[in-house]
Amino acid sequence: MSARTPSPKTAPCFGSFIGNARAVDILRRAIGRDRLPHAMIFAGPPGVGKCTLALMAARRLNCLSPEGDDACGRCSPCVRMGAAILARRLECEKRGDRPCGSCPSCRIREMRHPDLHLVGPDEGKTAIGIQRIRGLIGEIAFQPIEARYRVVILDPADRMTVEAQNCLLKTLEEPPSRTVIILVTANPYALLDTIRSRCRLLHFGEIQPEMIERRLVEAEGRPAAQARLAAALSGGSLGAALDFDTAAYSGIREQAFDFVSLLLGKGSFREASAAAAQATRDKQSFLIYIDSVSALLEDVYYARIDPGRVGQRDLLDRIGPLARSVRHQTLVRSIEGVQRLKLNLKSNVNRQIALEALFIEITRR
Ligand SMILES: [Zn+2]
Ligand SMILES: [Zn+2]
Image 1 (cartoon, rainbow, N blue to C red):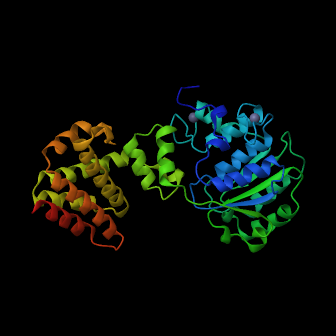
Image 2: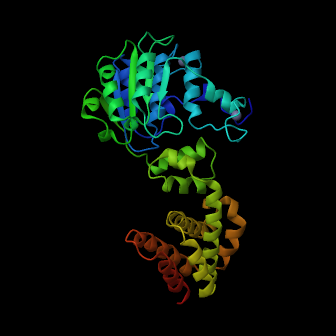
Image 3: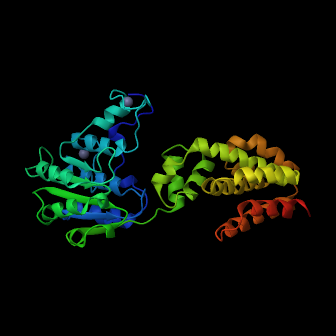
């Protein structure tokens, strides 16, 4: 196994789940007292770890030597269910059109526990149809094969067609023995009332950006500045922060650096206007651009007063000269100007004009 491929033994347990402490606590205590409801809905925004937590619960329910109310991570059920947790973020290392099936990541992805059922829309489909649910009901009609608890995770459960939901009703009401069914959804009200009334609802909320930032730096090894930005733009979703596209970001940051150089170095209006036109083409990346301008200005500021606090260490030798040449007043006014611009963006102002106006305000005084 290559160094960068994680081992299923290191898959996270409850203890390292970030955010939603209340939901985690309810779940851990219910499992510890053997009082877990047999049908549950995990409801909350995308990317906050609902399915991951469901898998962690499956792991703890089946661990052969639990440590307190967490799984040991080492026994055979723990390893195979841990593989399912890791598999959510692993891609084939050969990066071909289809998974090679033999690289370390593929081997983890293909580890299966026979009593863990992850049900989503079939390949190429958007809905979970009645056939899939009938098949599932057939699969779980008998005792679990080896697990103490069989765990069924439907994700996203709101993709079930109405027929599929109706088909599942009886199973939710009288689940087969030693079976826990978890419906994962960002939109619980898209489920039938009759489904909701048969399940215990567990609510999830957004994760604080500071927690996401810390996770990205400490567990994922992301550079501090990138982690800060990814967390700030994640909307409280760890999934979104993990998917944050580093390559695209570097390109945008280069553009932002050009604008900051013009702003602090008093470039010409023509150059600034051209930079603004390039930056404002795409609304989504413009928000990243402005955050990047803001992060760069902050780093120029820190480079002047306390270089140890510069977040974007990789740019230190380019930020340094800017920091030495700019007047303190200009820098402070630029930082304030960008903050105002960010606020104004919420009221749909013309993005190009806003950038040009900022440039004029800072340079023509
Ligand atoms: Zn275990
Ligand atoms: Zn592979």
